[in-house]
Image (cartoon, rainbow, N blue to C red; front, side, top):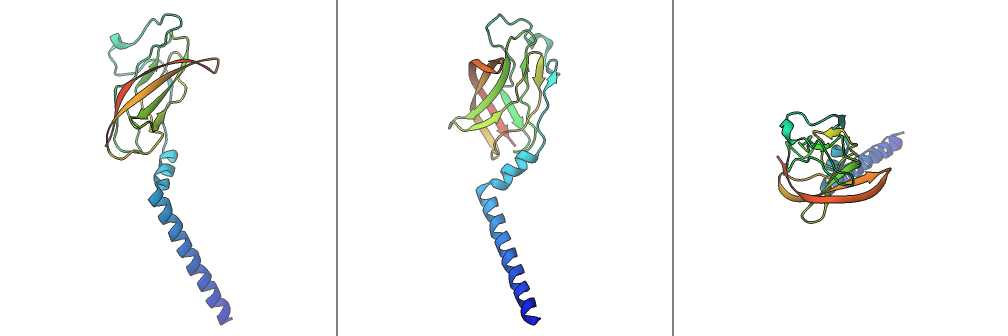
Length: 163
């Protein structure tokens, strides 16, 4: 009976040690941050135009075959897990659904928006990848889809700031 207690104690100590090592590895590899980011709620696409934007800025007419949209050129996140001011808008008169993808200057993809249909907008959303605090010069791609097929894209630059 004493031998059983000793064996159980050894097994318990071993299990705790293995768990500590696994948790340590998760922290060191950034996996815990990635899990936390994935579990934090993202933004919601809504119908209409961006609120708080000067009415003259909204795009009212989009010539057939062109891709036009609004995007915030200086996107601010309070911290690496919070919603940031992406401010994406697809004009109602646009023919295409648009998905936005943002890349760091090293080519790392850090954000992918949900598909935004004509007449919809997305004011705030979270990053797709964990970034340390800082200011990042980034490029973006506004990808136009029709019936689920990529029709073309427009690229530009944005600044992403993580507090």
